[in-house]
Image 1 (tube, each protein chain N blue to C red):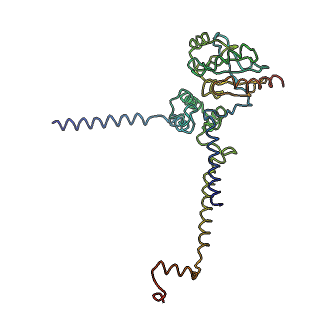
Image 2 (cartoon, rainbow over the protein chains, first blue to last red):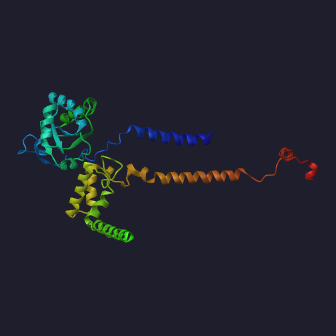
Image 3 (tube, rainbow over the protein chains, first blue to last red):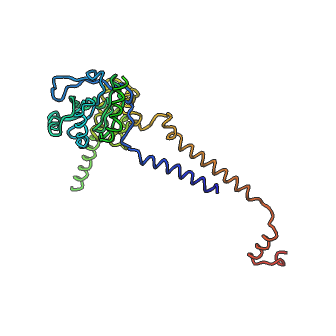
Length: 176
Length: 155
């Protein structure tokens, strides 16, 4: 009997590993930036290139940094969710316009609505690299002390907003 | 005459080809360093390629970062740290040994050892289970019947 149990056991273990592997999204690489200070940046704003915006300007606030681009198809999918969120006024959203043409970005916001308190313009994508961005859209939740608490790689769905982001926003706002 | 021309053309082609090779060889030591380090860094957009192989925009940006940092005099280790700080251990094709990667690093060797242990135990058991005990009377009978011999023949 035991001679059959061992191969069966090995099979079950391998099957379990494969089942877990199937459920994982290989595109979701755990970010080393969680619970680390958000990388500093100072970038020109998308609408007013003469004005700069930096991480410090959001100090004392819980806020979202959303990386977007006019060439990014998935951004269109999540955009209505962000527009709705902005209307509710629960949490300010700052846009990071990533490797885009300024005019394209502005036209895109004109077409789909602008949920952002403001957008900063990262033409070369260097701040994107500092934030470990590799697939737009990406969204960071940053707390009052400027620490990154959550990162979403890919589209922010209504479910993720409801189950992950909003509870965290409430928690971060309540505790400090 | 025609064969002479053909031979000349061949020689010319060889010389030109050699020149092209010469150009390729003059790629600087910096280029070589960039390529070498890039080959050890994973492209996060197309995850089964190194940033040296990938033409994804992010891979090109990262290659440029590698080159810039090398021009600034940073060591390979410093550049690798820079990448890991941003993208995590996942950017490394050769992940560091830590709690999360123990199975990855030593799992295959452990499985091999386990397999060898099982094989030797199996062999040892088989040897033990096959003693050279004399056949019982009924077994003798069966053997004789199978061989088609009688007691008289064997006696």
